[in-house]
Figure (cartoon, one colour):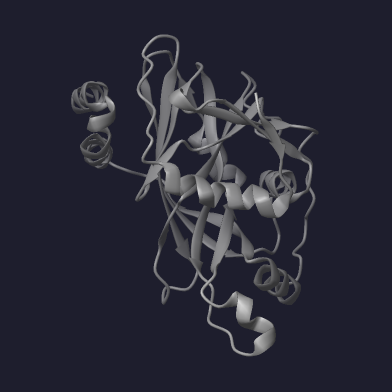
Length: 267
């Protein structure tokens, strides 16, 4: 079993790197494991900029007490497409989502000292508020596809984080806080091992100027998310599964998703 310890830059880079390998969708394992799925759209606070699709999601597993500040495990999504994100082939338990990443083109810069910045990308991590994280908590049962919901999140510069946002900011962006373990890529199982207790690091902002400078130099930004919408109709969930079925049928998921669609239609 290979293990790698990532510092904050590589942790965020891993999310973005993972999205390009999602053509290798794991085949379904129908005995003893289940799958979680969610729809998330990320929209900037200014309406002049377009909404973004998450390239990776941060899933957590929690105990029966639903304590999101003390997750039992933490995972990256195993497949994303558009607004859809999946965590395939997991052991039964309670799962939720705490953050998402996307990338943008770095603005073109001029001058010899900035030459290396040209044509590079910026990575962005959006930390979800406690209200939303708790809404996503869903029990995943053996042999089932479970839907965590449809969410629209507004992201903005960090100011005052709630305890859950602060805890996961601390966990994911601090060197040595977690260790990535690749277990069995054939069924999409991989996880981070938490090396310490997630603790709230920030109750106030880092300062916009300081954060923007750090983000420019390191090629990444962190944002706090605000839940804008989480209500949805049955027809929207059916649309979600039908779009996923079109893409996942070649990997053996077609009949399982069709069964899910039938159950949603009968509700």
